[in-house]
Structures are given as structure tokens and as C-alpha cells.
Image (cartoon, rainbow, N blue to C red; front, side, top):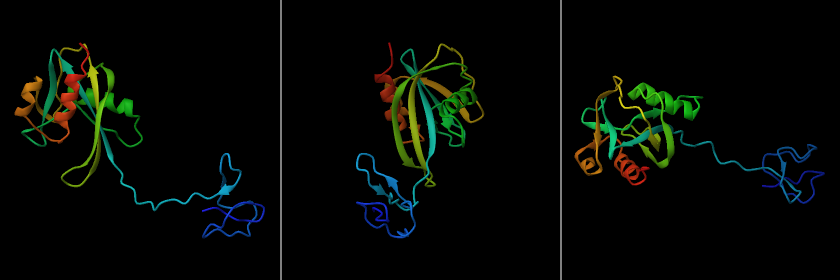
Length: 178
């Protein structure tokens, strides 16, 4: 909608805006056109997603997976959610430190992402990064029952909590730096 207020030539009325108020209320200039316009916003009925970052750590032809203590028999990847107002890089480092005591790592590249709803309909955005580290030992938090380093052929033997996990892992194997 474009506002046709006095002093705003070449514009059209915007519903709900009083055109008698000087200064083209509720409008903004359109770059390159010189007209004033009010942007019509969609209803504020947007989905808010939890964002979870996970690390695909391939070492010696094997990738690290973790058995989830909250869902025994289900396997997940190291990482976790970004807390409110937390820097995403700091959140990723914090989660890897908390979950597997990883002190230092390098984020090689973004591998993949998936938007989905959990069983209780929580909207999620999972972001998977290929990482590497020279650290040899890990230490599990209480969130995990066990850790395993598995090769690509073994992935079919595991049930993953997220449907996208196996795809993430297979991409990690194909994009690992030799």
C-alpha cells in the first residue's frame, strides 16, 4: 500500500493511516523511486524454532555418536541448543565442552541443516558442522550413556533420535579432509 498524504505526490492511500497528518505518517521512501510507502506486514503468526548445532567429528574413518540417556537406544551427535541471547559460536563451543569435554576444535564447514518438529511438536532447526580436533580423549556428561566411534557401514545398526542424523553423518564421511 502506498500513502497519498498531502505533500507526498505519486502515492496512494494506506488503510488505517490518516492522510491529513503531515509528514507522510507510516511511510518510508522507496529507494530509486522517490515515493513514500508503508510496508504492509503479514500477521505475526510466525513459528519460533529451537536451534541446535551438532558436530560431525570424523577421525580415522570413524565418526563419534552418543547414546542419549533420556532416550536409551537412540543415538545423537555432540552439540546442543543455543540459549536465549547466546552467541551461536559460543553456544557450540559450550555444548561440545559440556557433552564430551572437547577443549578445542576447528569448525571446517557447514554440512547440512534440517527443520523438523519433534514428537511433542517442538519446532527445531538442526545445523550440522564438520569439525576436527587433535584431542584424543573425550569425557561424557550425564546426558549420554555411551559414546562410539563407528564407520559409515555401521550406521545402519543404530537408531538415531533425529531422522536427519544418518544423512548428516554420511555427508560428514564424504566431506572429511584426508
